[in-house]
Image 1 (cartoon, rainbow, N blue to C red):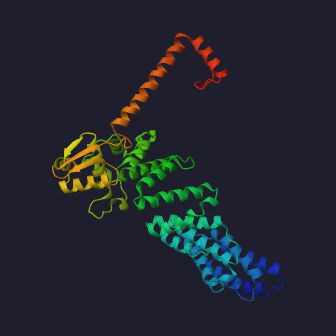
Image 2: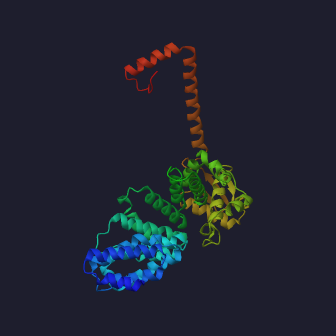
Image 3: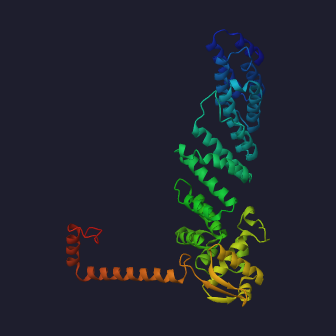
Length: 415
């Protein structure tokens, strides 16, 4: 018996339960046989206006559940596209099934790495409807999927729009996978918008998430180091550089050497800059308005700050020679950094001299001497305590017990 004859017999059945069972069985057989032509004929029959919605809706739901079993991406896509095309004139009657089929089609595109098509089909899913109840978590999942696909094709402008929408709903989910995808998208968009300090902090946060594989966590740490290096020089970057430098895992990252030089306020030579530039993404290599790159500007500003640890006063011409730029550009960079509060100093344009004052917040010699003094004091106290334990262990134990029972604030542990 042909498929058309079988479908005609099902349409002629009077009992709704028998008709639905008939469609269910036919769909299962067609999927098993990978018969896309038969599936198209069955979809036509299901959506025939003579077949009531009480049958059409659950029958389409059966198709949604079975379509993943169709062998081959092309055959599966053909079946889903045909169903969407046939639903289109009556979409208000089949909103739920239409939405589910669009998700299935997006799955197929993602499996084929056609992220642009996946994003486009996901964007057509209606998320506001008077016909069905759409949860906030469902909306969030769709926004995050669109975000991920748009970022894969480099469309960060459109992705930023969906990030803002997802931002309003991220609190509605406790799903860790969704939260991780959102945070990663957030970091990537901050990176693409050249908000490198915020991106570095977000990547570093992700590098500690235990639900991510070790390799991916190291990748996030490397991305954090890259963003920190590219960030504008100043106190805020000094803090994130310090955090990254003190992270024991950073030494496993290939860009650790430039991180170390920046943290220790050492001058960076052109060869190291060129090697680091090879690791950058395309958007991180883009030219700025003045013809420089983000990296060259970041390194030049860093070298200005490094120079403040070598000189209290320096001629502009000598600083320009040190930085590898002309005097006008050296003066312009210094004046901009002073104006923005990222460099403390004064420019004497008459004599062509720059006088530096290193901010304690930026980690200058004063704060470092203070830190060193605190460390020395703590080591001396620890040494005294160790010597007391060695010479008079019973006396120390007795004092600890007395301190504990008398509420001594200086005793924080048991003997």
